[in-house]
Length: 216
Image (cartoon, rainbow, N blue to C red):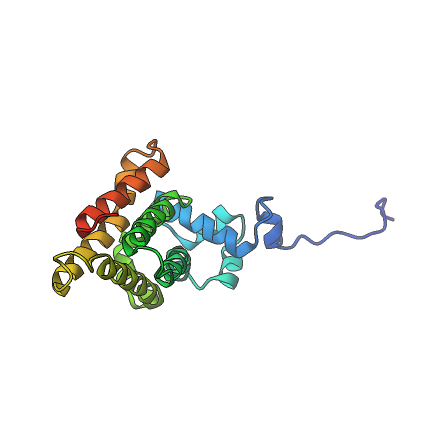
C-alpha cells in the first residue's frame, strides 16, 4: 500500500508558452517583435536564429511559429510598423495646406529622425539590411515609396518661389538626397548616442532643408 496522498503520480508535460515568458505583461507577438529587434540590431539579422528569438522572448521555438512564419516575417513587420508611423504623420502634414510647405517638410524630417533614432534598439538601422531588397518586403517598399513621394510633394511646394520650381529632375535628385540623409542619420547617431535627441533631430532637419535648397 502506498504512503502517498492518493492523488497518483503527476504527469510532466511541456510547459505552456506563457509560463516561459518574462512577466512583462506584453502579448506574445509584441514580445517576439521586441526580441527580434534587439537581436537583429545587436547580433545581425543573418546571425540571429528563430530559436534565439523565441528564447529571448521567453517561449519555445514551436510557440513562436504560431505567431510568425520565420525571420523574414518578423523583420517585415518590424519595418512596416516603423515606416507606418512616419507615413501617418506625412499624410497628415500633406493635408495641412494652410501651413508653409517648408515648415511641414522640416517637421517631417525632424519627426522621422526622432522616430528612426529614438526607437528601441535603433530599428532604423534595419532599413539598410541587404535582405530587405527581397520580395517578402514589397509592402514595406510600397509604404516607404509613398513616404518618399510625400517628401517630394512637400519639396515641390516649398520650392514654388525659388529658381528650382521648373527643374523637376533637380528637385527629384534633391529629394533623394534629403530622404537618404534622414534614413542614414541613425549611423551618425550610433557613433555618439549621448547627443541630445531633440537637438540632433533639429540639426538633421536643418541640414535636410539646406540640401533641398529651401528656407524655413
